[in-house]
Structures are given as C-alpha cells and as structure tokens.
Amino acid sequence: MSSLNGPRQAILVTSSAEVKVMGIQKEKDNIITLAWHMPVSHNPNLYAIALGKQRFSTGIIQKSKCFAVNFMPAELEKEILLCGRKSGISSDKFKLCSFRKVECTTIECPRIKEAIGYLECELVQEIEAGDHIIFIGKVLKSELSEDKKRLFHIKDDIFTTTKR
Image: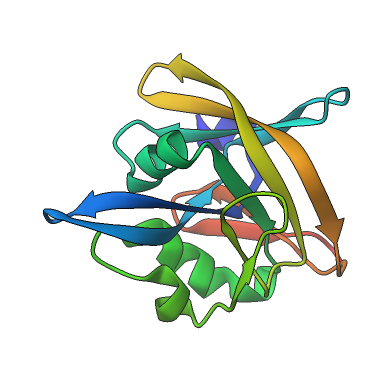
C-alpha cells in the first residue's frame, strides 16, 4: 500500500508515562517514527496518528492521554530511521540520537528541540482500525520554527525530500 499512497512525511512522535519495563515501574520517555498521520479537523483543531497495537508507544499514549508530533528536518534521516527500528522498551532513543528534550508547555510530555515544528496534543479519541489504533489529539499548541527540507517516506528504507 505504501507504494500507492506515498510518499508521506516522516515524523517523530514523543510520549511519556510511568510504565512497567521488565517488571520495574519507571517513568519512560519514548520516540516513535510514523508516516501515517494527518489533520482531521479545523474546529476544534484535531490531529490523528496511527500506531500498531503492539508498539511500546501505543501503551504509553493510552496511559498518558497525550503525545507530541515532531516535524523533523530531512538532514536527520539516520536518526529518524533509528527511532523507527529500535524499541523504547530497552533503549533511550533521546540518548541514542543525541536529541535534546524540551518539556511541552500544555501536556506532560517531552518534545524534540531539533524539530522544525511541533504539535502538543491531548488525546480525545482512540479508534481501532485493524492492527492499528488511530489516536486523535486536540492540538493545544503548535509552532513552526524553521522551514527546512522535510523527509517523506516512500516505502521500506526509501525516502525523498521537499525541494527546498
């Protein structure tokens, strides 16, 4: 299906919650790479992301009821791929990618300082869709700080960028 409906902009979604990891309760910040996302309403301002049911971030978002969408520059392709390949259960993706955390101002969640823009989203609805869950978040804050080339996923490890 990716070949037909792509390319789609690759984003990093950050989330945070106290979860049980290997039998130990701890606060866990996580990052997941996604290409399935879109605005779904202007009034109220809503944004949707789709995550596989088995993903570590799915449980974190279900527990915390919030997430941040980080729009990343194309020059960070290697880091974007890494965040999609590693599980947050056993790794700290912020450290692996040398991303700097910035605490969101409207939700209990970090965002990525290296992002060119972000959305702070409060979860308002979950929709089961086959092997994925669509999370719809009310956008409480958004910002575009830089207009740089963005990364678009075509399929597998194939990407393209915008022309800028």
